[in-house]
Image (tube, rainbow, N blue to C red):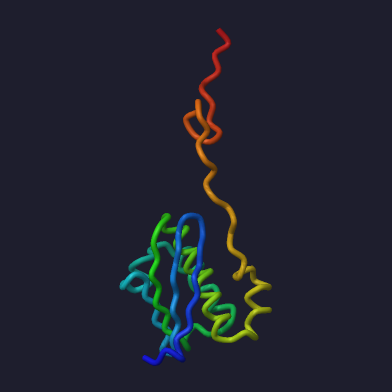
Length: 131
């Protein structure tokens, strides 16, 4: 595997981080050493991960290798999607408009709100008692 034909991108979502490498190949996607279908079992998550490849019609042209950590499965799927979009951009700058139009280059800024003192969670109050 030649370094010149490997393209990379880092994706982030919530607390999850995904480091993505794409190489010319048959369209095989591996996440943390497992097949995509074994790692992300829910169909919606599989759809989220494949979205950048579907939008740019490059699904069967590249092998995608992903290392992801942190967060939960949903956050990791969003991070992988972001990383794949950035890796495709690294490979071919002309895809920027297509990826941007579909909102795949924008990092989702929503994070968990921090817990407040004197409360159970960020916004949960204790039960109100009139008497």
